[in-house]
Amino acid sequence: MAHAQLIPTVGGPEQAGLLYFCTTRAGGVSQGERESLNLGLNTGDDPQRVQANRQRMVDFLGVEPIWLAQVHGTDVLDADQDLLPAEPRQFDAAVTTRSDRTLAILTADCLPVVIWDEQARVVGVAHAGWRGLQAGVLERTWQAMVRRCPQAGSWQAWIGPAISQKHFEVGQEVFDVYVRAEPELATFFNAGKHPGKWQADLPAIARHRLEQLSPGAMKVHLSGLCTFEDDARFYSYRRSPQTGRQVTIARLAHR
Image 1 (spheres, helix red, strand yellow):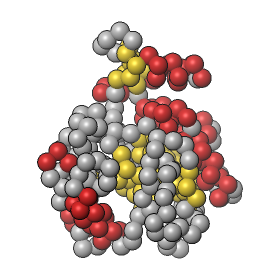
Image 2 (cartoon, rainbow, N blue to C red; image 1 turned 45 degrees about the horizontal axis):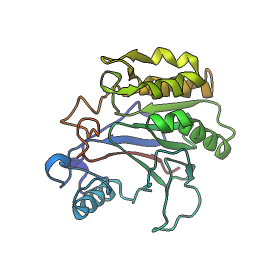
Image 3 (tube, rainbow, N blue to C red; image 1 turned 180 degrees about the vertical axis):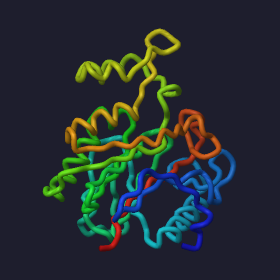
Image 4 (spheres, rainbow, N blue to C red; image 1 turned 90 degrees about the vertical axis):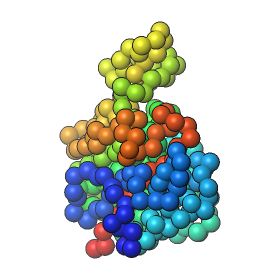
């Protein structure tokens, strides 16, 4: 934990048996618009600086996280299986019941979502932009968790720092693809400043969808933190495409 004091994080309600948090921009070595703890390799940053930042995360955690090559899809990695170090992992979510597995999701406006059962026997993380959210990445993540832990009866989720409705303008096609399939989702869109534009509330849509998965047995926590507004703490692709990535980490405690 040599760099623990150098890496500020934000998180949700405490859960016995579970560690989870999202990093901020602070605590790394990247420079310029990607200053300082940029953890994304495909961001145009100096790869050596990103690797140095990732090593700081390893020092902070005491273990190497399972990094994913995120593609805005819905595939879920079963992190309980044995994984080769150099294995390509094109997934946008991961689940585990093992305490020696540390899950990681990179974001810069998209939703980082952590899901767990209230006995902390299984945990999942998901990267949900508007495409993945609409296509069902949260549903597929939770279904994979239920298969791993069918005895779980109560669930919680945390939606970490992401772009807020005020700053997330989308076109008519995004509104249509959501509302055509689920008319009730129209309440999560406000008319934009320009014709054919809408302000989409992705965190609220995610909360709604999560609550539908296990009615009465899924408690969802919103961080309420906007990556676009808080330039001092978070990377935001909408604010500047020349940006970095923060990471959301989740790990079950040793039992």
